[in-house]
Length: 34
Image (cartoon, rainbow, N blue to C red; front, side, top):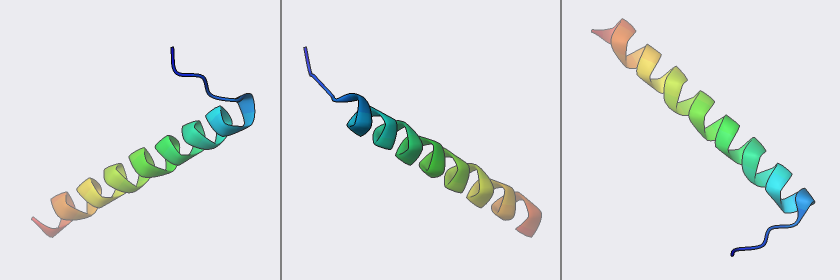
């Protein structure tokens, strides 16, 4: 099983949250442009 330290896991989770937020925000902007 792939092992990730707690610190790296926290960084990974924060990166995923930022990525999801940016993707959602970008989709909202595209919908407004329509």
